[in-house]
Image (cartoon, rainbow over the protein chains, first blue to last red):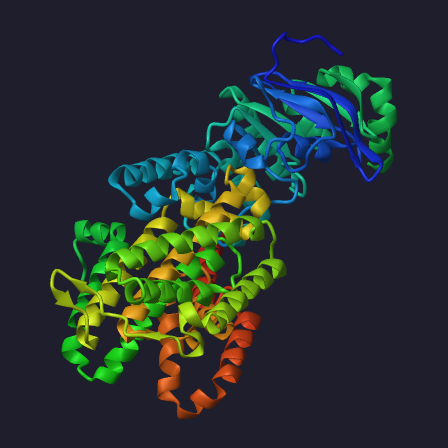
Length: 262
Length: 332
């Protein structure tokens, strides 16, 4: 394993997951440094989505540890992991189409809004003030992601590119410790892709830690500090974008296929 | 006429509270206008069902679950109050509270295992629960009075005021209904309510945002059972008798139809849904005979064309049309 800083924010060690005998992940190790963008790439079926799903509690890993900020996330339920400060976007958009754009972003502040159903029923003044504060935070996030003028619209009717940015706004509004971006530019045109790249850089500058899963190599090479390559459920390379770009294993497994289809 | 901007801002900011106040004023004045006891009786019945259906609507519309057994909780409330105040001679208010707490515990015991199930399984489990409870009411003569039920339930009273006629009960039941309405409106405007709305639309996304899906579902289930129980207790004290007929699985279906007409997740729509389904048989004579068919047709037609329910579906439709136009105007 490549030696980086001694204390990464996220340290995954020997993570394995089988689906009915088929290995989706085989002893994969992975780390993400604080304040950096770590990209996770690999051809379809490489295990990227399984890794993200293990990390966010959607599926339970068979073996291995996921150390995040001193806590082992392996096997924790999704909402607990979210509350530890791990936010995410989804490969296939998962916005709430019938809720207003603003309410979608407010959903990103679930942990900050309070859990007590009893208090929520009574709506005491401090809860009302908190709601107002959260609303301001949500409006700020919408502003940062260029959606402020659409705050009141039902999210379902937004154009695809807006929905992608809405999901990012929802993932970043809670000031998360770590954000997983699962194919943030899939299906976007070059103009919208550039816009997302700009937003990722902007978040990086403001100190956010991100893990980026993406097929768009231009985006990956343009915004990442470090790139990890998976193939067939195993890690085959890791390093700076330049190192990975010239790694023969990667060229064979991934970029070779890329250039063949390009 | 143009309102001063300060007034407008006040109205926009407090529109929910103002609507509740406005409705309260109308309800306060209603007995002055409606002095026919028959009509007032129907209005009281609407008030009772509003309390129960508000809770059920939170469960169906916000938690995204279906209960086909809510009449059981309604009936448990009614029987609980009936048995405690007649057989055990408990005063009505403590009996109501004790019953509500017991029903909450029952709902918790049923909810924890069954809410792990989803869709059809949960519907079947709640339906089965209603069926079992109904059988107990019919069979356990010694406690429940069997098919003929229990009578001689005393009316409720407060500070010497006995709610023993339709006008007095109007104020009691609508007082409760307005409190229930306010609580529901508070809940849906809170973070907890947003979490519920989120999980109703996408459980995976909701849990990724920190919503404890299992806990939230059980919480709303218990809350809705308590609302139904309180409505049932009021029902028992209003009519003075209870029997199993009013709390069968068919009543559960009626409650679901009220939710669907009112619109899934629509608190205000609930008032309309309950009113519409309760008043309809009194307006149309033939309805009484064919009520099951008509209810079925209403349910199927609404769910086919407006899966979110009548009021919510129409509101969403107009909202989306309006928003699309704004979006188009903004782009062009």
